[in-house]
Image 1 (tube, rainbow, N blue to C red):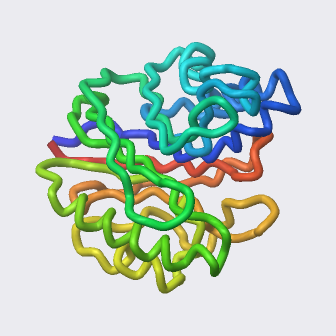
Image 2 (cartoon, helix red, strand yellow):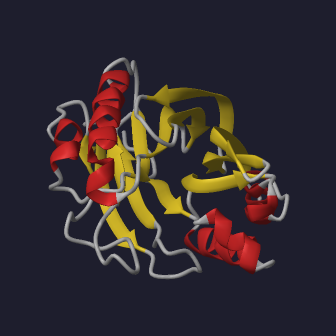
Length: 234
């Protein structure tokens, strides 16, 4: 018996741009609502501080999209916190934050336990180190840590995020070669508007079958969101 496809969105919202545009979150929310996802993984989310006009961006996007929101801070900045978030139209059963190893800016993995579309699954969101080739050693450590953590999964899971590297990058080899999950969609598609390359991803364990993928070329962020539909047999 097949359940209906799960609609998953990964979106780096470039939250600091809120500083220059007081309606920025409304524009982000319109993009999200326009594709009607079941669950969304957000990166570059701010809670409080001057960069976010003191807003709790995850909570505000939850209100604007009428979805349940949970924020996972990675580090403090500008009088507030910076990190990842999850939005879902399903039930949020719990969440946890795990630190990822690396020098430089702290990075984390936010995991939410979700009941949605007749399924219970773990939804992981992350944002690996930036700074091009200078961030490669950090991303190597982080991708290895991600793989080891996901090996502990006992049920269905999905991983989304901005990995700040193209699919063929050496630091992503542990993830791309991992047998416990696979990348969804076409590696050649571009997700960063200005770098013109793919650095945003959706991964799923082998029990999921990707039935559709779309890069949503809309919104004010420097990243385009990635929308994937996943089918699972119950």
